[in-house]
Amino acid sequence: MISLSEENYLKAIYHLQEDPESSVSTTKLSEHLKTKASSVTDMIKRLSEKSLVIYKKYQGVKLSDQGKTKALGIIRKHRLWEVFLVEKLHFNWDEVHDIAEQLEHVKSDQLTERLDQFLDYPSRDPHGDPIPDQNGVFSVSNQKVLSDLNIGESGNCIGLKDSSTEFLNYLDKQNLSLGKEIKIIEIEKFDQSFLINFEDKTLRISEQVANNIYIKTKF
Image (cartoon, rainbow, N blue to C red):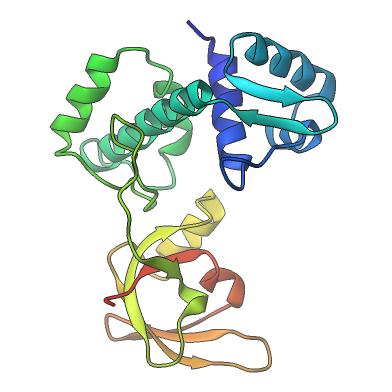
């Protein structure tokens, strides 16, 4: 059995690892979790003793296979609960993260699988993040960020790199949401802003916004 704090650390390490073989510095982990470096070191040692992470002094920490499995299980529960909160309880997509943070620590595997079945096995959460299956496998899609598209190209919005409340509120104001087909009309050379079209609406967005919207192209 692992504690709520230990689960939060495993999830944080998973999100901070750029790839399965890379290590995360204790400084970076401390900044991400907003906690003291000494507390991070103590927790990492505890997780290492449980064979959930691989830690080398001065080189950082990475998840073991067992730790990755645990982290993916937590992420799976979090994203399923977000789907439930939006689709069944009608929360807005900017309201569900903190609630799902609490629900993700429910230990029952049976509840998780019943929830998945009840929601008809969703592949993505309300922000477009992929939901791993019970084996920790993500569905593969030909996604790219909107800023990678050229003038005249289009694709469906399937996810967001930034799921902060501020960004979600900005998208709500523009009526830009998942599932919308977006076409690049113009790219401004001066500031690399994008003129886009969706649902007969034309909108200019910054390069920063375009970098945070995932698009699935048709080819």
